[in-house]
Structures are given as structure tokens and as C-alpha cells.
Image (tube, rainbow, N blue to C red):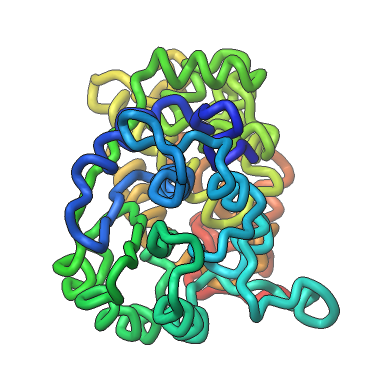
Length: 367
């Protein structure tokens, strides 16, 4: 995971965040700023950089944190008394931004961490907000991402968003403001974070040891941090390019070991380009030559509809190995491929998949 704070030399963790950070520092007139950024662009790092800059005791000419003062060192140590970072529990464990009530040991450590920001987290934050600032630079709250707020937590936040204590600023991130409560949106000043220029992102990815960064960046819709996530999952440019042909042969390729949401996301990219090529156009994620011939628009359209339906339920507790096998079988049929022995067996009566190659219509819980 790349660094997410401005370092002791004043360097931002992600180079493409420099312009959005300066813009946020200059544009934030209210007490609550909503940063709207697609996943994979570094919204959390931008929000933390903004908070660090507000708490910096010797900021630069444009207001960016120096990285060396006592305030910056406290932020870097995750110990600044005037900074509260509200993340889902799973992200708190991954990043070290723990709350006072978090217990990363014992039975709590073995429990599967929540992917939500819960009402107890927000209530604890509201109690903290009303305490006096310790270092004279005001208080900063970073909440990432707003979509992780469950309805009760979002409602508990509304009054503070409308009228926080003097000297308190909130920085909230989201990928799509339309997914938030209108009452949350209306209380925030919004700032849209654009994707980085391709040359900047490719140079940074090359510095991270990513080969053929341009290919993977295009496959990830211009989102550099998604490329790093792909590397952790073992997806490189060659394995990505081979996916359509492997699906035609009934093999999972880079889908092996993927979660259901990850598999659906990747298959939607394959489906998008297959539809484009079948209609006489070019691909967005693959070269046209990487798509099979003889594609059927009706079959692909039905496959797309099925994938979109599954995307709405992909977070259910599926038996993931069986579900991914079914997704591969459905892709093989939609792309006009012949099933190998593994795929054929999966579609036999009594097998784990439906005979038409679709994933089960009801989520199967892992035993």
C-alpha cells in the first residue's frame, strides 16, 4: 500500500494529487468539504493531505503541509490530538487509523471486521468534536468513504454537518455523491477530483515496478491505485490480454481466486469490448484482435444483463469458488466458445451451475 501522508520532505504520496490539494485548500470556504473522486484515484490520501495541511504549523506558500513541523510529525505518527479519521473497521485495521474503542487483539481480532462506518463510530466522533482543540489549529475530521455510512450513522452526522463547533472542519470523500443522502450532500461544499493525466500516472506506476503500465491503466479506466491492486492479485498485462481467449476455452484465467464482485467487474469489461467489436467498433480494454470471432450480439446482450443483475447482489455470501466457476461457464457460452471438460462437468444435471451456464439465481452461502 503506498504512503498516504505528506512526508518529511514535503512530498505528496501521489503526484497527481498536488493540483487538487491546492485547489481544495483555496476553495474550501465552508466547514464541510465533499471530495468526489472515482475509486483508485487516492481520495483517502487527498483527504488526509488536506487535513495534514490544515493542522500543519508551518505550511508552505500555497498552504500545503511542510511535513517537518511538530503537527505534521504527530499526523505521520497517527497521534495528532486534533485529527479524527473515521474509516470502516476493515480499513482501520489495514491502515492503522484505529479508534479509541478498537481492540485489534483477542476475540475482536478474529471477528470479521465491518465494511461500514457504524453509528457508534459516528457518535464517538461527535463526542470528540466537542472537546477543546489541543494545538490551536482547530480540529479536523476525515470521513472516508461516505458510502460506508449506514443509514443510522448518516442521520447521526447531519446535525454536526449543519452546525459543527467553531474551528472544526470535516473532509468527506465519496465516489458518487448521488449515492448519498440529499441532506448530506446539501450540507457540504463539493469538489470533483479528476483522473490523473495518463503520462503522470504511467510514470508513477513504472516507478512502482509495473511493466506495460499504459495497458493496465487503460484496463483500469485510468485509476492508478487499481493497477496496484491488480498486481497484488497477480494480474499483469499479459495475463489480462489472455483473458478473453481463456474464457472462450472455459478457463478462468485471472478470475481464479477472485471474489464474486471482482470477477463480475472484470467480466463486465470483457463483455463491454465484446459488444463493441460485435457491433463493428473497437475495444476499450482489449485490442480487437484479442476478442474471438463470430460474436453474437443477442447472446452478449443477455450476458451483459445477467452480469449487471449479479453486480447488484455480488456482496452476498456466495460460495465463491462455485460462483466463479458458473461465471466462467456463462462467459464461455456468451463468447461462443466450447467448454472444456471442467466447464462441461459444471453444467451437467445435478452440477453446481444452471444448464444455461448462468450463475445460481440465489446466493449460496459458504458452508
